[in-house]
Length: 54
Image 1 (cartoon, rainbow, N blue to C red):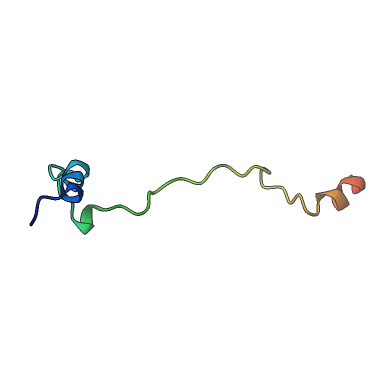
Image 2: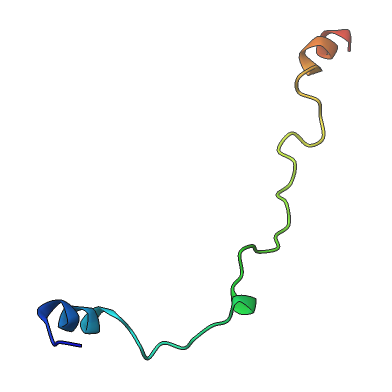
């Protein structure tokens, strides 16, 4: 391969000393816990109708 300016630039940008990873090691999701319900379990869509009744 001829030693061109483009080839030398590529050698500076490519990190060949990085460890190789397999597809099994790639994680696409993370298990989380859902946040608490901001309404506290109340039905805020119908609460305005129930509130006047006591």
